[in-house]
Length: 146
Image 1 (cartoon, rainbow, N blue to C red):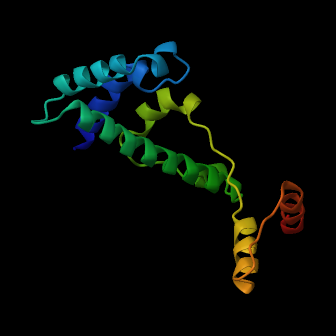
Image 2: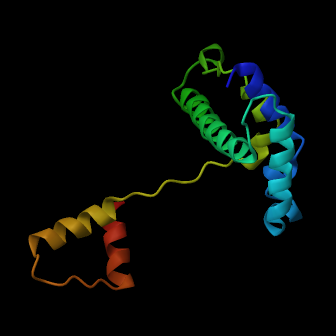
Image 3: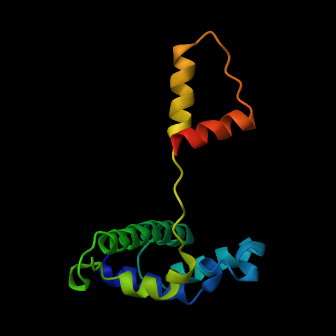
């Protein structure tokens, strides 16, 4: 897909909030309305063989790239850069996607996998012993690893 086709796809997608706005009632309730909206976008696109499946797949890929761009911006701000050194996305479609998707994309807090690594390490030291941990023991482990 060219940059122009990508921008066109996003403009059409933006006009169909049932596809991207989780605050709408019909976002989760009517799966058919989402399929119809994707078919309408595919019909307008001038790419041969472009279907509703392609609309959804392309948007998922773009959304993933969008969140990566958002992450780069946030990381550049954290690093103590001056305002003129903050990362600025260079992809042609970023501004249009940001204009409608920004309120709906939230960074999730990551979780440490250190607890599982610790448990696995302990289990490997005693492979013949079954390791049953209750909630209190898991809480103690979490506190030790903080």
